[in-house]
Structures are given as C-alpha cells and as structure tokens.
Length: 494
Ligand SMILES: *[C@@H]1O[C@H](CO)[C@@H](O)[C@H](O)[C@H]1NC(C)=O
Ligand SMILES: *[C@@H]1O[C@H](CO)[C@@H](O)[C@H](O)[C@H]1NC(C)=O
Ligand SMILES: *[C@@H]1O[C@H](CO)[C@@H](O)[C@H](O)[C@H]1NC(C)=O
Ligand SMILES: *[C@@H]1O[C@H](CO)[C@@H](O)[C@H](O)[C@H]1NC(C)=O
Ligand SMILES: *[C@@H]1O[C@H](CO)[C@@H](O)[C@H](O)[C@H]1NC(C)=O
Image (cartoon, rainbow, N blue to C red; front, side, top):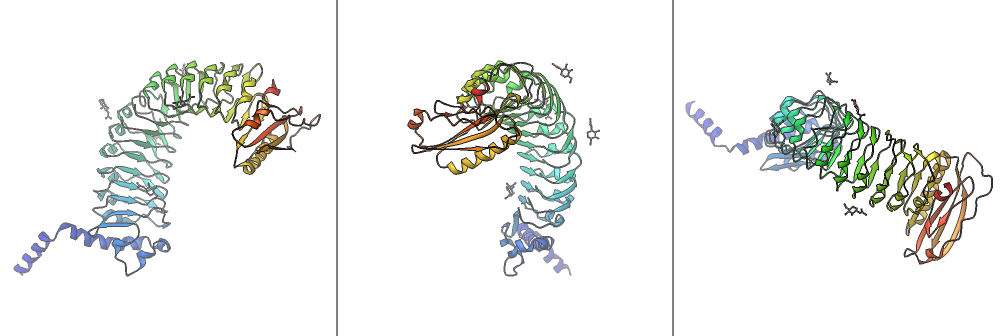
C-alpha cells in the first residue's frame, strides 16, 4: 500500500506537466468535437477516426498541447462550447462567424495564456463575463457583431497588453469607463453601434498609442475636449452620430496625424476652428448634420483633403474661395449648408473633383463657368434642382461606361424636370459617332435638342485615343461642349 502510494507520488511529480496537459487537451478536443457536431459537414476530418485530434483542421498543437483554435467562418450554429475554457495553453482562439449563441461561460477566464480572442459575428448574448477581464495576456479582443449587453467594467484596466479592443455592433450600454485610459498599448478602440452614453472620459487622452478610435452611433454626450485631443497619434477618429455638443475645440490641431475626422451628426456649434488648416495629413473631414456656423478660410490649407462633407449645417456664409486650393479634393458635399453669395469660381481649380453637391443653399449669382472645366466630374447637383451629369471616360471601358452613363442619366432624368436629354459621343481612334437619346423627364422640350457641337480639334490631339464624351441637355435643348472637355450644363445655367 505504502509503496503504491510512493509510485503514485513519483508519477505525479515526474510526469512533465506539458505531457499531462497534452493528454488532457486531447480529451477536451473530443469534447469540443461533440459540441460542434452541427458543423460536421464543414469539419470532415474531425470525424475521421484515422486522424489524430491535433491534426484536425483549425487546431494547432505544440507537443499535444492545443495552442491555437481557428474555426472562423465554419457554420456551426450551436451553443458556445463550454469546454473551450479548459485548454490551459491556448494562445489564439478564433470563433469568428461560427454562429455560436448563448452566453459566454465564466470558464473562458481560465485561458491564462490567451493572446488573441475573436468571437465576432456570432449571436452571443448577455454581459461579458467578469472573468474575461482577468485574461491579462490578451493582445486582441474582438467581439463585434453579437448581442452582448451590459456595461464595460472598470476591470478592463487589467488588460494592459491589449492593442485592439473591438466591441462594435452590440448592445453595450452605460458610460465608457475612464479606466480604458490606462491601456497604454491600445492602438485600436472600436465601440461603434452600441448604446454607450455619458461623456468621453478625459483619461482617454492617456491612450498615446491609439491610432484608430471609433465610437460612432452611440449616445455619447458632452464635449470632445479634452478627451480626444491628447491622443496625438490618432489617424482615424469617428465620433459621428452621437449627442456631442459645443464648439469643435481649437486643440483639435493636436491631432497632427489625423487622416480622417468623422464627426458628423452631432450637436457641434460655433465655427470650425481656424487651426484645422494645420492638419496637413487630413484626407477626410466629415461634419454633416451639425449646427456649425462658420467655415474658416484655412480649410484651403488642408492640402491632402480628398473628401469634405459640410452638408446640413447653418453656415450662413459663403463657401471660402480658398477651397480652390484643395488640389486633391474629389468629393464635396455641401447640401443644405446655409451657404450664401456666389459659388466661388476657384472651385474650378479642384481638378480632381468627381462629385459636387451644392443643392439647397442660398447662392446668388451665376454658376461659374469654371465649374464646367472639371475634367472628371461624374455627377453634380447644383442649386435650384438643376442637375449636371458629365463624364469623361478613358479607353477600355467604353461600353461599360456608356451603360453607366445611361443609367445615371435615367436617374437624373427622373429626378429633375430640367434635364431631358443627353447625347453620347464616342471618339475612338479619330472616328466620331454620336447618338441622341431621350430621358424620361417630366417635362417635354419646347424645341428639339441641339445636335452636339463639333468636336474641337484639340480632341484629335488627345494622348488618349478613346474617349467617351457625354453631354447633358436641359429643357432648353442646349448642350455644351468646350475646349476638348466633356462639359455639363454649367455654362447654360449662367
Ligand atoms: C479570425 O479569423 C478571421 C477570418 O479568417 C480573420 O479575419 C481575423 O483577423 C481573425 N482574428 C484574429 C484575432 O486573428
Ligand atoms: C446611461 O445608460 C445606463 C445604462 O443603460 C443608464 O442606467 C443611465 O441612466 C444612462 N445615463 C444617462 C445619462 O443617460
Ligand atoms: C492619465 O495620466 C495622468 C498623468 O499623465 C494620470 O494622472 C491619470 O491618472 C491617468 N489616467 C488614467 C486613467 O490612467
Ligand atoms: C452652442 O450650444 C450651447 C448649448 O449646447 C450653447 O450654450 C452655446 O451658446 C452655443 N454656442 C454657439 C456659438 O452657438
Ligand atoms: C495632395 O496630397 C499630397 C499628400 O498629402 C500632397 O503632397 C500634395 O501636395 C497634394 N496635392 C495638391 C495639388 O495639393
């Protein structure tokens, strides 16, 4: 009896622990197989008795110890498997898009080696178990697109190696815990589409490594200052569709690396601060649906800007002519923005513009003919419901482009009483064909549309041999075509 006991002690003490864990893990894998039987059709090798569990697809072992499970996109549709919490050495768990449902087991908190956890795109419910906040080695926690509810716990401060925290598209409520501010390694924080309220905690300013912040589509109140302005490395900031208010702080200039500032659909008021012009890397500035009242001249210094959206504000001022300095601007949305005075002709200098929407403002004076010189304008919505469609397509896509334009014109024709016809002229290797189509406008023309004017000689010198040229006509039947460019209605709206 005594010696037997001794042998037992020996066994316990001298069996390498990894071998014990390994033996154990093989058993747990069998349990996991039972739990995912629903996904049998997609996990064939799991049900092939010849195969050793460590070679099943999605399983990675080191000496019979499971270190990685990746069943992402395998449609399993079963309750979340409880036994997962028993893989002591698991570093990487990816159950993204498996259709797991139910609540997360507390036992997940036993995965003390876990570094990557991805449970996104499932149908998981309930609050995040408190034990989850004890996974101190976690680097990525991705829980997007589930039905998680409850609040984020201050205990989240324990996850100090976390680089990526993503819980978007859930029903998480309550305030953003200030303790998030202590996650010094955080690079991505995605909270969008939840039910978070309260204000942005000032402590978030301590997230000096944060590159991407998305807290859009929540119910966050208060000011964005000082919360975000200290995060000097931010590249993408999306706080749109919240209840943020007050002025946009001058300190926004501290976001020197910002490429996207997406702040629309909030209650911001006052003027856009002049300092914004110092954000030399800014490519997207989206401020629609706020209560902003001023646009500084300095927007013209945003030399990297590609998209500017200031629709739905109360500017009650003119569009600054400095906008003509935005050589990279491709999209300009300024619908119903309370803009007054003339449309600046300098806008014609923005040669990369492909979409302009200036509808619903209080512009006076003519539409500057410089706008017609925009090479690549695809569609533009101009004041008073006048629409312009202009397109210049380069070789190779002629047929496709023709069809696209046709569809576009049909749409415009339905929306607008002013445009009723268009003509496509294609120029291929010097031969010109032109055809006239009518668009189902609500109003008929008083006189037939003019034939497209002859192509200017500069066309024949075009370095690109295949150009599809499109004209739009209004109900006066006037089309326009000038200087080798495909022009829209602009000059005839003068
Ligand atoms: C999980 O798998 C998906 C799909 O393969 C992948 O896009 C995602 O990056 C993975 N998650 C982690 C944390 O590695
Ligand atoms: C924030 O949400 C929590 C949880 O839903 C709620 O109890 C609290 O009253 C809300 N606070 C505010 C200021 O709306
Ligand atoms: C943020 O940093 C300041 C000092 O820079 C410190 O006093 C404060 O406690 C920090 N907040 C958090 C939540 O870590
Ligand atoms: C902005 O709105 C706040 C209320 O949210 C108000 O107190 C303040 O006077 C407004 N500022 C401007 C410049 O309109
Ligand atoms: C376009 O953006 C690039 C990159 O920021 C910049 O270097 C360049 O000067 C801009 N071009 C114009 C015409 O402003």
